Image (cartoon, rainbow, N blue to C red; front, side, top):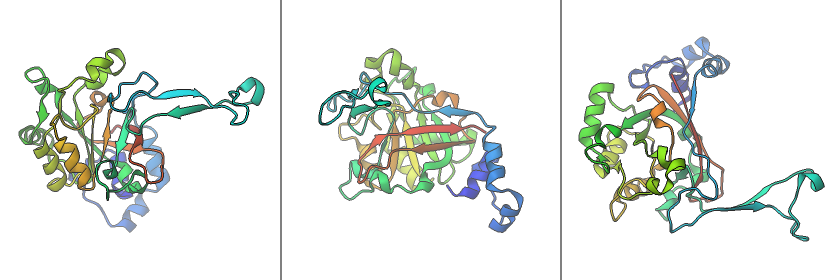
Length: 270
C-alpha cells in the first residue's frame, strides 16, 4: 500500500473506489502530521493473541518454554533485587501464536521474513465472513461462489489489500484450546486463494486457524507461499472489524533469513 492510499483510507475514503490526485496536489492538501492526527482518533482493534507456554500449537512443534535468563558463568537467574533488571529466555518454534509465514517457510528459494517490504506491512483490510456458512458446514472452505456473494454486497476486493478470513475460531483460543486445534476446521479453498492473488491482486491473506486449509497436501498454503506471498496465521478479533474500510498494520521481528515468527497485527477502523 502506498502512503498516499493510507492517507485517504485514514480519512474514511473507500480504497475500492479511490481516485488519487497528483502527488504534489496531495502534499499541498495533507501532511503526514495531518494524516496521523486523523489516524490517532480512530478506534484500533488488536488482531493478535497473547501467547505463553500453554498456547495451542501443532503437536509436531511442541510447546514453548520460558525461563528466567541467567548469568552464563554463575547460572544465577537475573533479578531486579540483585541486578536491577530481569529478562526471560524464550525457546519456541517460529510458527507460534499469531505469526507470519513468509514464502521461505515452504519455498527453498522464497523470500525470508526480513526481506518482506515495509510497504506490505500496512494495507487496506477486507474481512471475508465465513461464519454464515458454518452452521450447515462446520469445516466450510471459503469458495469462489462465497467471494462472489461478498463482492456483490461490498464491491470488488481492492488490489493491494490484505484479505482476512473470519471464522470466529479465535474465541476458543483461551477457553477451549483443544477445540481450537480441531481438524477439520473452516478454511480457505485453493480456487479462492488463486483468484484473490491472480485476479484481485491482494498482497497477503490471514486467518484464525493454525493452517490455511485442511487438505492432506496443504494445497492452499503451499500454493500461496511458493508463489511469493506471505500470510498471517492465528488472527484474533476479526468479528470486531468491518468487512471493508479498515487498515491493517502487521509487523514482526527482523530475524535474519527467518522462516517465520510471532507477529503483531492490529486494525485501524474507519
